[in-house]
Image (spheres, rainbow, N blue to C red):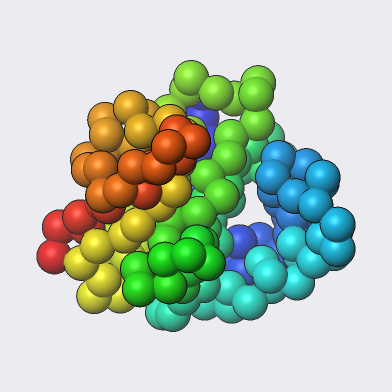
Length: 152
């Protein structure tokens, strides 16, 4: 499968579709959050030289995945920053390296910003371990925080 990864600010035509994908995956059952709320958050990623960052994977002029770099993605762990957040690949594109490419691109961007470590929350630690993340904290409900070295 051939696809491109770009910063979302460079492809604003995909902003609302990416916001819809994120909203449907994680936020649709939470009151007060809408596709517009997600779009407003994504619009804050206006360049490649500061946080937040938002990447989009595109195939045949359609977004097939996204990942974000945010200051914090866990209200209980404000001491940890920044976070890899909202990695998502549409079902029909899974298993083709899209998620891996998105994570690697985001880690490279973080390294370019001088960030030595990224944090992420997941219930799929095996996936991120294959990409170099290490267990940082584990919770009773199966949620885990992982740390990923950017190589700097």
